[in-house]
Image (cartoon, rainbow, N blue to C red):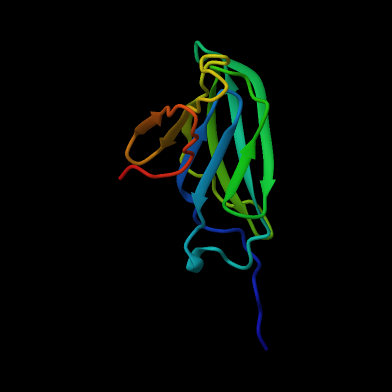
Length: 143
């Protein structure tokens, strides 16, 4: 006779990254280690807590269930701050990741043929962005 106990994950997702533009925030993370998942991950819950440009909470939270380790939030407020975190769900929600703070870019700051993406991460604290005329580079990592 076997008895199985269904549990939530015992560790949180890690290496949370946020890529930002003037109205979009894309989160990417690493799944919890397999020995700490306790079953099958059904989805991840990504949460943004909105703060205005002076870092005062607005009382608005955005929550998104993602089936993979990436989540996109669209139509956000330019130049606002967002506190970002994620948790894995098996039979219940596991612990929340270390949160990171990301700021969106100003709206209309760049011409239509320019891109400006920022990268925010919890380890180590890093902000990297670049602009290239007539081309949009939205990938690449700084190590």
